[in-house]
Image (tube, rainbow, N blue to C red; front, side, top):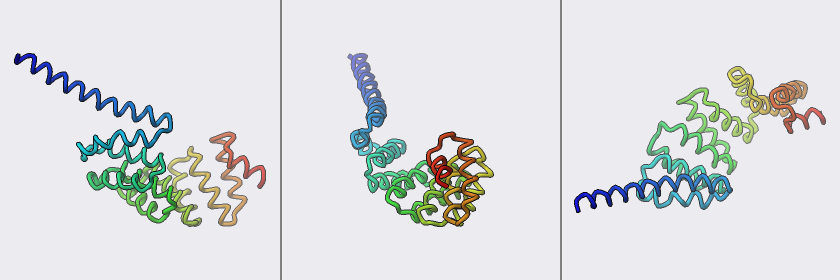
Length: 199
């Protein structure tokens, strides 16, 4: 009887763990089918039982962002950040729903906060560039892209933002050159091809 109870306990634990693993697998499956709300809701009961489960919180935040539930996504990212103030994942993730809502200044503040922890984090810089463009801070964006280009010389996205800043600052010749460099990195890049064809 003693061994039977031990067996049942082990079986329940294995079932619980495999069920938990299925939540993760199912969330990825649903995400691949663009069923973001359904994927996010899989974590509701888990987070009620384990509110400190950081990855579950980040996963739901991401899925809520993909579903367009930006306020809920922000809530999850902020909760993850409160639990772990050093989390770059949560800080950088939080910029996504803010940018989607065109809350440029708030997104810039969050991205800059992440850069205080990790000064050359690629994703934080990308999100900051988006915010600077949204704020039409062309001179600031240009300086930013020039600094980034020194550190990520093979990156086409940095050059795209540099070209946009140059164009809006009235330097079309420099913008054309930047777009030419984009095409060296991504032949057929739509924006660069269009600009060079019409410029």
